[in-house]
Length: 304
Ligand code: NAD
Image (cartoon, rainbow, N blue to C red):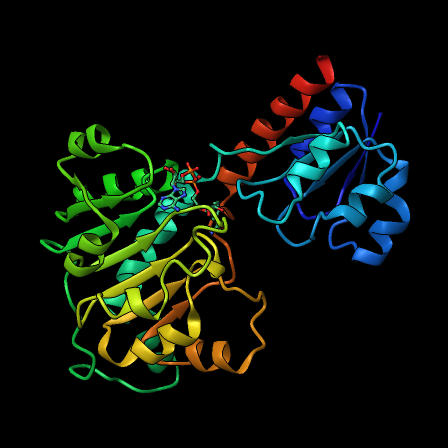
């Protein structure tokens, strides 16, 4: 069997594939055009969130047996069509949670205390002491939207910081939330009562622009919004409109990566916004765990 690795991954996965008797070609950053030309030669395609694995790519992959997403989100994959074509789709849902949760907490502090802005100013020779008074997270209410692997890890860490926890989810997570001293509530209550709102839902038709103008209007003045899930979960034009009355926003994900549109450029260049380039799972630890978990899941399919 042969595998094409289309994005930057931990080299451990190549070793693991080799042990399974699978030859891997590593072509990180391969263009869509090139992928369409060569994907037909491979049985396994390993990729991250950059490429759209749509009908055209799947049809070009005449010999594909496994689509392996090096990460969690499958929103860039036409899973239904792949399965219809008899192709197994695997991912690594557990590996990145801790790292994404840590980045989420980092963004909360970065926004609350304006750390990147202050750092930039001091590096530029300014000493803006007294000009950017921050806020504490201790004693504030955190609203976690999507109480899954990452949402739960964020809530646990936030409890440790002395925050009160509210959670919204489409499934019953009441017992789990209560175990850490929080409460499962409606989305409306969460938005109205939270000082910090953190998004951890998958991107689906139901979560597309979940935070739209109408819902943002429910958010308290002076609140912080953090998104490390998927950019499309927020209507960014509406977010820009509400930015003045918010304390700030921390974003690891955007609906256009890298951002080019006027609205996104305007939003991310605002003093109140801290932005990172979709690096939630980019730690050595998470990348290694991703390689292990994905290789395990590929092996399970290969052995069937
Ligand atoms: P998960 O599946 O463990 O949890 C998602 C939770 O959201 C579940 O409890 C689910 O019931 C809930 N949910 C689904 N639809 C909902 C809806 N309409 N309303 C409310 N809740 C809903 O997923 P996870 O591993 O915690 O990942 C969460 C998000 O983080 C995903 O969007 C994923 O793509 C993203 N992610 C980002 C990075 C990054 O680099 N920034 C890395 C990994 C994952």
